[in-house]
Length: 516
Ligand code: COA
Image 1 (cartoon, rainbow, N blue to C red):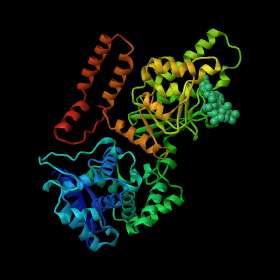
Image 2 (image 1 turned 180 degrees about the horizontal axis):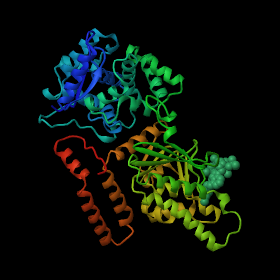
Image 3 (image 1 turned 30 degrees about the horizontal axis):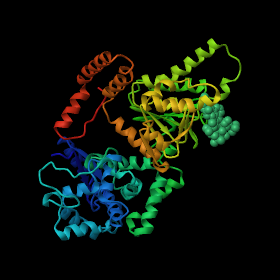
Image 4 (image 1 turned 90 degrees about the vertical axis):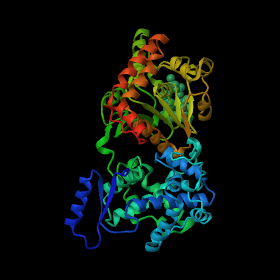
C-alpha cells in the first residue's frame, strides 16, 4: 500500500494490447506503472538497487570506507531516503542474500557476491528484525540506525553510484525500459530524489566511466565493465550537465550570454557566472548591471528555486573591482554616485527572494568577497583565498565590506582583514565563520549542487520569508525585527506548503513543496 510504483513486465509472448491493458489497470488502481519490455531478472528497480549495493559492499569489505561512511554519504549527500546498508537491514539480510543468489544464478551480470552479507547471513544477524545486522537495534518499530550527517564527507559518491548507472545504461541500450521509466522507477520505487540518469548527468558521464574502469580493474566483475552506451557518450562529448547534454539535454536553450556574465538555467537551479576569466573576473559596472538584470529575470521565475553565483575560468571567483576603473579624475560627488550604484547591484542579492549561494574556487577578494558575503551561503574549495585588499591601494572596501564582514566574523576579525588587507586561506575563513563549507576541488561542483538541491526542496515561500526576516530584521531594533518575524510567520503558516509539511511529517513521508 505504501509503494506507488508498479513494474508492468512483458513476457516473450505478451501482446502489446495485453501489456497496455495491464498498464491501464495499474493506473486505474491509482498506482504509477512503468513498462518493462522484457523479462530480465530483477526487472528494472531491483537491478538498479542490486547494482548500487555492489560497489558499496566491496569498498567496505576492502576497508576503503566504513558502513556508516557510505550510508551517511548516500543519505545526506545524495539524498536517498535510507543508507545502502541501513536499507538492507530493514528489508532483511536473509532476503537480500537469497535473492542475490537467485538472480546471480540467472544472470552473470548480477554475480557480484558481497562477502559482508554472506557473513551476516551465516551468523544469523538478519537485520532489524533480529536485533542485529549491519547495525544494532534495541527493538521498536520506528527505530533507525544512528548515521551521523558528517560521516560521509570523504566518500566518492561517483564510485558508489557508478554500477547502478552502468546497469541503467544497459537497461536502456537493450530496450528493456525507457529513460523516463527507469528514472521514474527509481524515484517512485526506491524514493530517490532524482533519477539514476539524472545522477549520471550531474556526476559527469566521463567521471562515471573512470570510476567503472577503476572498479573493473580492481574487482573484475562484469557489472563494472563500462556499458558501450556510456563509452559512446563520452566519445561524443555527451558528458552530462557540464557539456549541456548527457542522458538529458541541458544548456543551450537555458543559457543566456551577456557580455560579462552568463546565466545558465538548470531548473530548479540557476547559475550566474562572472565571466572575465582573463581578468580574474574583476568587477566592472557592466558586469554588475548584467548581474542585476539576471537577478531580475530569475526574480519570480517559478522554475528556479536557488541561484548559484560562481566565477569563470579556474583561478578566481572574483579578484574584486576592476582596478582600472579607479583611474582618471572623477568629481568626488560623481564617484559617490557611481559607488552607490555599485552597492545597489551587490545589495540586490540580499533582497533577492530566493536563496543564493556563492560557489568560490580561487580568489574572492575585494568586491568579489563583498558579492560572496551578500549571498546567503558560501561554499569554497580548499585552495580558495579571501581578503579585503583595498587598503593596499590607499582605499577601503566600497561594496559593503565594512558592514557585512562584521556581521559574519565580528568586529575584531573584520578590522584585521580590512585594515591590514591580508589574504586568508579557506580553512581560516571557515574557522572565523566567513564560509559555510570547505570542500576538496574534485568534489566542488557536486557539493555545491547537493547543497543547492537541499535548499531547492525546501518550501520556497517560507525560505523567502526566512531570508528577509534575517536580512532585514537584523537592521532594525529587535522589537521591530520580532514584529517582522511574526508577520512572516503568520503569512507562512497559511500556505499550502505549510499544510503539506505538517501532513508529510505526520504520515512519515518526504514533503513536496510547490511554493503555493
Ligand atoms: N582589477 C583589474 N585587473 C585585475 C584585478 C583587478 N582587481 N585582479 C587581477 N587582475 C588582472 C591582472 O592585472 C592580470 O592581468 P594581466 O594578465 O593583463 O597582467 C590578470 O588579472 C591576472 O592577475 P595576476 O595579478 O597576474 O595574477 P597573480 O596570480 O599574480 O595574482 C591576485 C592574483 C588576485 C593576488 C592579484 O591579481 C591581485 O592582487 N589583484 C588585485 C586584487 C585587489 O586589490 N582587489 C581589490 C580591488 S578594489
